[in-house]
Amino acid sequence: MWTILLPLFIATLVCAAPAPSQSSSALVAQSTVLYASDDPNPILWGPDTSSIPQAIRGSLGATILGPQDVSLDKQNPDLLAPPSTDSGSVGNAKWPFSLSHNRLQTGGWARQQNEDVMPMATAMSGVNMRLEAGAIRELHWHKTSEASWAYILKGSVQISAVNSDGQNYVATINEGDLWYFPAGVPHSLQATDALPDGAEFLLVFGTGDFSEDTTFLVTDWMAHVPKEVLAKNFQADISAFDHIPGQELYIFPAALPQPDSDAPISPQGNVPEPFTFKFSQVQPTQLSGGSVKVVDSTTFKIATGIAAAEVTINPENYIGTLRKMNGAFTSEIHAPTTTRRVMLDMYRRHTAHYVENTGNTTLRFLEIFNTDRFQDISLNQWLALTPPDMVKATLNLDDETIARLSKTKNTVVGPA
Image 1 (cartoon, rainbow, N blue to C red):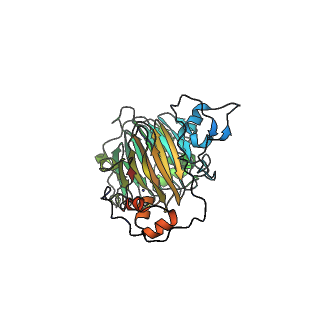
Image 2 (cartoon, rainbow, N blue to C red; image 1 turned 90 degrees about the vertical axis):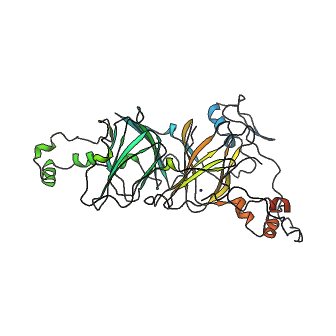
Image 3 (cartoon, rainbow, N blue to C red; image 1 turned 60 degrees about the horizontal axis):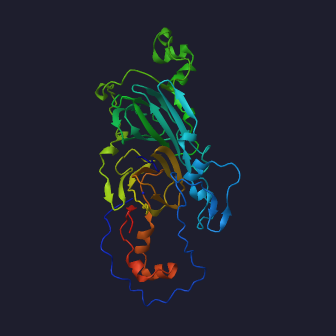
């Protein structure tokens, strides 16, 4: 099962609990506001619940009398019946690709998410693309603000690119691997037959207004240049251009790609940093509630605009395992999701959040940040490394609870 969600990280698992806090002599905190509610605010239902969801939580709300989309309400219990902790100020933070328009081509398809369909996503966009074996996403490039990062969901893709110094790069990568093209670098993509059906991948762009329909395509460019000019530019007979496409191809079928070793040799040499990264070969760090592995510009040098983590959260029958409560203070998080379906979630910069697996299968997702370094702050670690008297005065926690706080960052935690 897969989810793609778009934090640093894990040094060690929980060590022995530190000695009890020496704050017992501190003055008892004086309450200046009401204590937080003791209501546990459980999730009221899920996708497999047999009952019909209603807009009721405790003594609040009422039944639905009019038409109801039951399947959608089952997926969004905290929207129909919000917990008491909800102030109602957070906008829609998820978008299923199933609701995106799909651009169907001979040889594949592409569907996208940007701020047009998800207004909260002002800093990142995503594209879900599929290529049949041999099919090509034609030679193209993006605007100066649109670097391109990709994760292969299934299959294998050969990528090719040329930078402004005339250095080229051709490489084939597989499921779970990445590529990154800085803005303005022309490139192309072609699925291999490592998987007979071809390949599917997720593309991420560090801007909310990206559109897959406005990339610069070589066929479209040449179709709008007089052939006389083409002949002069390429120093060829004008008849050489008799059969160039009259409009853009975008995605189209072709013969399978040749081996990487057959790529043209540039007199300017290869690019200084590879545009691909074999993320599938990075061993995850195993944690009490799952696993995590991270990639950013410290390991994938060329990827100066996107950092990511691949996270798994183990299933629990009743108590969901948590991707710990944390704050992403340096970047916006794009959370493309592929478990049963492809979903994008968005957490804005400086937004505290958590991810809980409430199902009975392993949850797998990506966290993707529009930044060069993967960083986050763990609430547990933050409190553990703050003077205990300060924590006690602020939160009215007792010494035993403060002593159990973890001074190391546990990215995924299991039930206590």
